[in-house]
Length: 436
Image 1: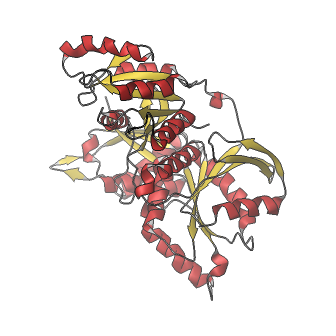
Image 2: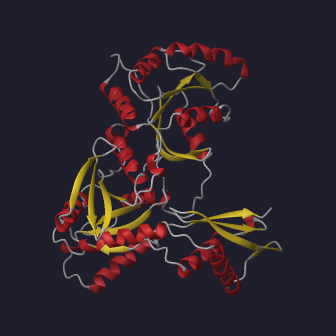
Image 3: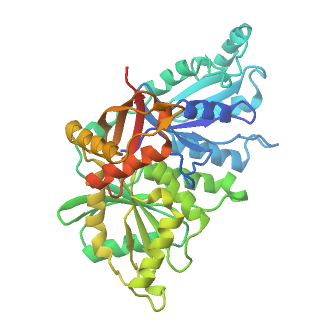
């Protein structure tokens, strides 16, 4: 199941992006110090009191001479359609403006819960001004200072109370996967070819987004739900309007996936945007398979050609060294029959659990083969390791001082874990903790 989506809306210059960065920045996460992993400013993962959610910064809703311009109405409608909870941000210094009232009217008519954040309450003396915003008809206004983080906790308490009941707690053996990539890399062709090859379509289920349809099918005795996403384009003028929401829908598809297929175009080679797109799935901690489509168009292809292209992928996508690569052709259906089995294997690897005793044997053997480093006369000591989560597999390593564990040594330990256990297709998160 996809995480709930929280959309931040409001007119320009009320501090939406500052609030967005504050909430996203407070999320406790493991971020790899690896080049090439990027996250777009408008989309982030958030967490509060154990509740995970996706955070969207919708940009400033600008008012024109008309009550609402087409652009404004489109942005507001998409925010309403996509979000589970909407945070409307206003500025206490400006008071209630006509633009605030027009935005509030749109949100008021929706069936979505709205939490009102009165921003820039940096001075306690301004708290009494907050009550003026009851006139917007959106319920209790929450005073916050996005710059200093004051009141953000109370705001998030109100947000998570409005999350829908999560049906993900129910046992579901269906594997959800999505295809992402630039336009015209052949994602839809792969979808059609896979379904045409197996001829096992059970039903079409209306997706959670406007444009996507979740297709349910069965292959090799396993249930799958497949989502084809719109092509993610390079930023440009259109990005501020239509494309940012196409990206939003792709992000939601990634969020709801167990495994993500990153589709490349063999004809065009690897583009910078390909690496940017793949970074979304990697950062979300999803299982990943790199699918090189249109392989039939490569002239004089042989095993060496495939090896050279594989080496190029490994060079350009260094942060995806764990992801398996498959060369396919949607046109000729070459190797597409192998995809469901690959997806199932990656899914199982994402959910793999390792006993603490076995894990610690591997860690201690790794340290014996390559002793821990020392810094300024202080040596890193590793006491214990345990797995604390799956999807992705997450391990906590208790040490004497987390600052003594250099990135290269953490990567060494990760590689030793991967050699001992098959985690192909899934990222691994290592958390360094000081033993108390």
